[in-house]
Image (cartoon, rainbow, N blue to C red; front, side, top):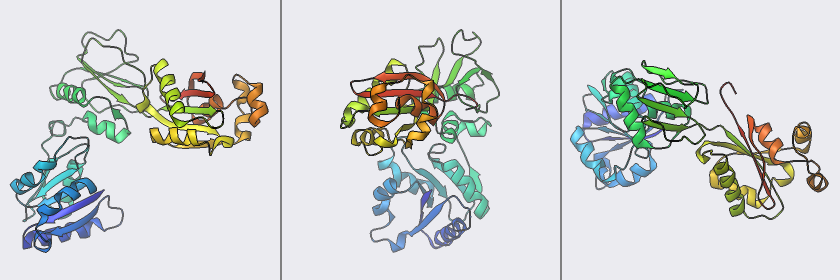
Length: 340
């Protein structure tokens, strides 16, 4: 993480240098850059807007009030705000002020405490109760949180010790004492008061409050005729996902055949979803193509009987959607589940 460290006094400057020096040791997770108020033309306040956009976190070696007043115009939401930690210039306390979980301020405050022997001050309720917060669980597993308000509501229920159901298509379980593992999202036990669902699939309205975390477990194979526009391929992917009641936030990767590796429409579609594209050779596809529907036209054109299904299969998971045709475009989806 790229961190800015602001100091305002001579003692603060010395402490900031100590923190920066610690970050330069081998294996440390932070790259910390020091800024001293007296050496910045116009003062540190003039740096705040750019720092807020360009850095992952900010350390204020100052009074908490100074930090609050400086960051107030830029605070937006917990998904995008950088981590903010305040350290008094005597080094007694390192306070996680903003973006404790998603931004990483709690971890940064604890790291600083370990380096300068200060007392870390963590005020997030879940941490103080030994509960793994949903947003931190999602971050550590690279799950997309579909709705932050529902995350907040279910976390509040966990803080109050409510019985929470947990359903997941993936390995890994959130650390919470009063948790019930669910095999499915149907016929939920009446004692369960809320649900955490880790799934790529559509969740129909449950009888209790719930939050959805989207795992990256959908692999999509793409085939197309030469020259098809990226917009059409994007629409074909979205349509196939919608028909199968799957979320585009769960896309993990795309695949196609080597003949199509420079196809502008495919490259444009992959860039739109910002996911990796894997190129498979003719030989790789030939090894598995007998498992799928075959097209003599495709064979005569590029040398294999099928593209989208073998590519989805080779990317990993079970085929969830066989070859879906969209006017010269074929889309197939494989879904990874627990234990691969």
